[in-house]
Image (cartoon, rainbow, N blue to C red; front, top):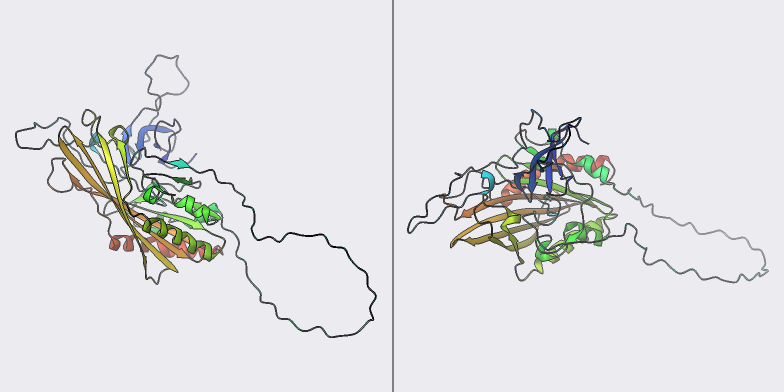
Length: 400
């Protein structure tokens, strides 16, 4: 168990993440980027005195689970719905916590193509760890024939053989070691999630681009050696930034990973749509919109960009329009992902910049303070913060 406080998978399996304060599990939980409170032992029944308290204790530092991005507090009492005026929405628990998923998003975010925003249709692929080699010639038994021939002396021709250097296969431990460290990022960046060394291959609406495979599934399809969903950070300007890594036996395999990703996005002629109930999305405060259903509509685009920082760069921008109607009033927001697939030899780094913006129907004029719209320039700046150290570490390990 880690000694530092951090978000970890909920051991009770009631939520996606639960805050580990460095000593024990706390009551603070997070589902699909939205923070909440759920006691580790919610049943308040009598029991004989135990040697240790049943309720988790939060350490003095931090005093509570760190917000994944700035919060917005709204009055707990509903505003009066006057004639000709919209009722103001109330955001869940007074906070809106956004976690970046990988699109490679998980991550949280994690490492899937899309950040988790609710329970969408998905399936996990069972992947064999061994793959039968292809192109292996079949051995056929032969009969040896002994023939006596005259002995002659001849000089064998000189043959020059090209020497090929084979790089060692990457391990998840090496990829984790290459990830950004505390000294690599600005002091204002807050570590939100630790690396996930076992990302799952999945597919479905809200999981992969256009309801298809997520990044891990595509990577395995083209023969990845190792993959991790790296750390994610709350960044200065708002939103979430994360970096994942995928290693392949050859640079051709890494290039094929980018090509498969671009083909999946470009082949998405009709926007992918799916729905998430308010009980899962948890946007409103309890008592408001409990029976609402949120609609998600995805609009991804993929472009190969010219770069001097990598062998290839595939830039994917995806805007997801989120909306619902409750009590005759419309509510909406936009979730934007800037996801860059950056090839360095046989390793692909995947940067994801993630934010929520464009809120409508919640009674305030304009976006709240924590709203953040990721842009190409912001993704350029944030990836530049971590790229050099990651590439240097991979090179020192002999992986590049």
